Amino acid sequence: MKPNFLSTLFSSILAKIKGAFWKLCYQHLAKSYQREDWKFMNYGYAPLEGNPEMMPLEPADAQERYCIQLYRHVAGDVDLAGLEVLEIGSGRGGGADYVARYLKPKTTIGVDFAKDAVEFCNRNYRVDGLSFKVGNAEALPFADDRFDAVINVESSHCYPSVAAFLGQVKRVLREGGHFLFADMRSKADLTVLREQIRESGLALIRETEITPNVLRALKLDNERRIAMAKQMVRKSKLRNFLKFAGTEDTKFNKMLKNGEMVYVSCVLQKNNSGVSLHRSAEAQNTSFNLA
Ligand SMILES: C[S@@+](CC[C@H](N)C(=O)[O-])C[C@H]1O[C@@H](n2cnc3c(N)ncnc32)[C@H](O)[C@@H]1O
Image 1 (cartoon, rainbow, N blue to C red):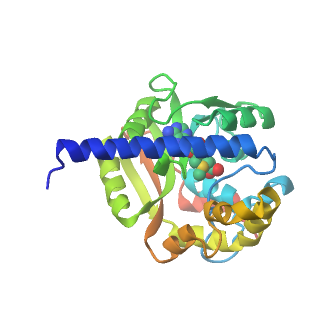
Image 2: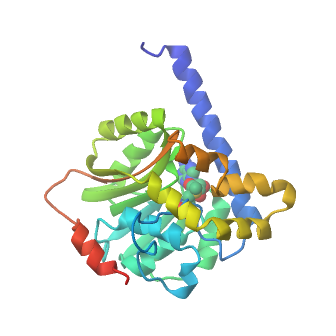
C-alpha cells in the first residue's frame, strides 16, 4: 500500500523528534562526562576466531581496544594513507584520533552535531592533521568533492533522514572516494537501509553482517564497561547507563543476540572510476597480524 500524505507527515515528524532526542542525549553526555579516558561510544568488534586482539595498540589505547577494532574493521578495506578523511558522528573523538595516528591520512576531520562533544575533542586531541567541527550529518558544512573517504560508525540510526545523509556523503566525496560505514538496525529497518543505499547512487562494494563480532566484543569488554559505568554514574542511573553501554543482559544486547537487531558494516564507493584504493584481505591481515 502506498503511504498517504498524513502517514508520511507523521513519520517525518516522528523522525525529527527522534533526531532532537538524540541531540539532547549526546549533548548531555558530552557536557556531563568530561573524563578524557572515555573516547568511544560504540559497541566494538572482535574477530570470531583466534586472538580477539586483532592488532597491536599503544598501551594508552588498549583499554578501549574493541571500540578501536570496530574502526579498524570499518576502515581496513581502504588504504587511507595520505588521503583527506571525514568522520561523521565522531562523538568523543577516539575513532578519528585512531584513524589519524594509526592509518596516517593527510587530514582527518571529525564532525558531530553535539557542540560539547566537538569542544571536548578539540581540547583533548593534539594530533597533526586532526580537527573537529560542529555539523549535522544531513547538512554537512563542506564543499562538494572535498574528501577521499567518509567514515560513519554507529551514528546513522539517530538521523531523521538517512537518505539526506547519504546524499551529503555522496556530495562531499571525490570521484572514486569511499564511504566506510557500520551501524545497527532492526530487521525491518535493515531492509529500508539497503533500499536507501541502493537509491543513494553509491556503489556497494561489500556488506558484512558483524552482529556476532559485536557480541563477542561486548562480552569481552563487559567488565570494563560495568566498572566504568559504576565510576561515572550514581546507582539510580546505573541501569540506564548500562543499557546505553550494551552490557550483558541489557535490552540491546539481548536484541542483538535474538536477532531483532542486526549490526552491519559496508564499503561503498562514489562512481567507481577505476581508482581502486582497496586493500586485499591478505594485505590487511599481513599489515596488522598479531601473534
Ligand atoms: C553512538 S555515538 C558514536 C560515536 C563514535 N562514532 C564512536 O564510535 O565512538 C553516535 C554519535 O553520532 C552523533 N550524531 C547523531 N546524530 C547526528 C547528526 N544528525 N549529525 C551529526 N552527528 C550526529 C552523536 O552526537 C554521537 O556523538
